[in-house]
Length: 233
Image (cartoon, rainbow, N blue to C red; front, side):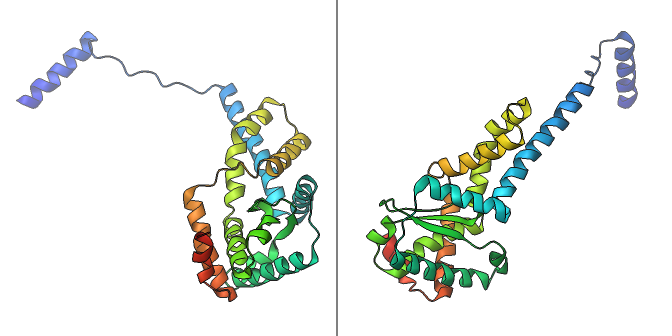
């Protein structure tokens, strides 16, 4: 009986028009569809440029040379030999687990900046400040720093952070037509070179790089205690 009453009530409401009609779905116009397709195409251009500097040898070399021009290069045979020795050992350590590192070997140089810092940009391009050699006289501790930066490189932390930073502004400029292929390529290069110090790396990424560094130096035969010693500086 209850079901019958409910059915009658619903029918009466329907006939009287008291039930509000369902809102009409908002239809996409042809313009909306074209706009979405154009936006996707333009962001694909941005993806292409980042992959050029991150994955191709030509792009990586351009990025490497641009960093050298911007920051300067310190030519010190003793420090260069020490750096090369550490990088070779760490590369072998990483290569034992991930042979792909040999397809994209690290490009590195010493810049004359005397502050304590090193950085790994996208494309496995590493910048090592002269200050590293002034503050650290222990090769094992230097290996910890470089291992940390290689951890960022292996996980593409900086490349991902740069892309996240670039996408809103550069993507919008491309979509608006303000940047073509060549201009976009230069903008991505400029971003990478001039904003390496301001790229925000998450705490999780930093922790991951620390853990990877510990593994790398251990397999490379460096003193694991150097990690704790460095953290206490």
